[in-house]
Image 1 (cartoon, rainbow, N blue to C red):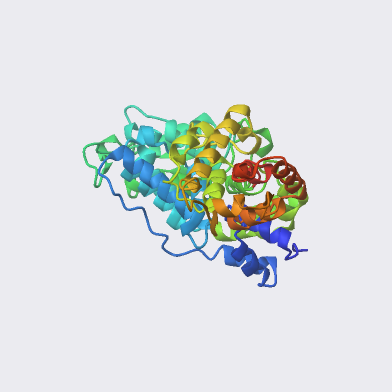
Image 2 (cartoon, rainbow, N blue to C red):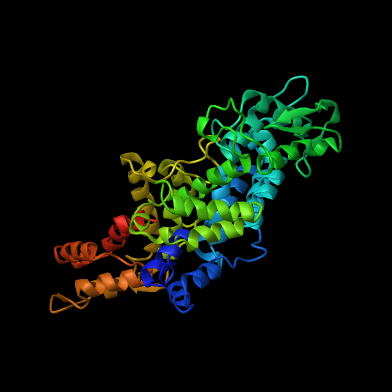
Length: 469
């Protein structure tokens, strides 16, 4: 039975798919009649989401601009932020790291692939990103030669990108690595750096996951054959270390592996139920690894709206920063948050390793929470740059509130009650807070001088509700 179209379910859908539950979007989706229709609306993403335009010739600053552009798209500028969240999902799965890749233009090329095509097809995404120079450099396939094979890329393609640990053997690694020889780059060409070096390629016929590859044809496509086998007719070998999957079709194993990854990012890090897994796996397999039916199967499944899922995910630093920017109406450039995200544990373009970022409770520790609080303070200050001036105000997402409004008194009694202050600020920040938090804030406001009322903004933005996805 499908989930009901309730305000709670719609808010949950938006917080997970679009990062924040914008009030106008909540009302729009509630008017559509069903969760299925609401999900279809969320997935109606623009055909062309655009791309960052550089304003500097400095490579490192361009990386900052790319990050700021991406955060602003998630927080403000995209009409359907699922497009940007899916692109970040792929960035965390098929990841490259700016420091090693070395060129912001190459990172933009990869991120734009995920942004433009993140809801298309897994096979197509994997094929394209494999020969983008960002990935060639990051996992050293630009050094992969028949005379000196480099297994780094193909091992990770199977283990971390598509199939999972233990579902292949070392002979498969060697065969797939041979298929990917010859793809490299030209470091001094920043415009079109990809190069094919036929003299580096291993032309020998190989066996991968029980299937023959490198058997003639265009040698530049031999590597692509490995993806076809993994997502097509491959078989997990009988000596694979994952005993449970021995003899299974690799396409089924890949569908389950990818579905667990998707569920962890959008739902919770607890494993999906058998029913939810079946729905996601079937959607991938029945549609030849198309992404859109797969994501829809997850977002429309009633398990996605279970209480344990609604309370089962902590916002990643990226999602937290996007929520801050959305609530206060700030742009990512306003508060220097790009530089603070590394301390929070997640800075776009800089995954810690090829495994990407961990999820959920990983983000909750003393150091990371202190950095989140510092980020909140920066944003709060950015909203109040004129607050203590004559006629100063707190500038929030849906309007401004002046210092005079917050501090005005009539015969010593505040003109605005504590409840009115909370309601005004939460309305302007588009925040929906719990009864318990509201009670705590009322007690705080009733205990302080009216001149300190602006501190409520900071307390709202560090509250538990802001930490939960």
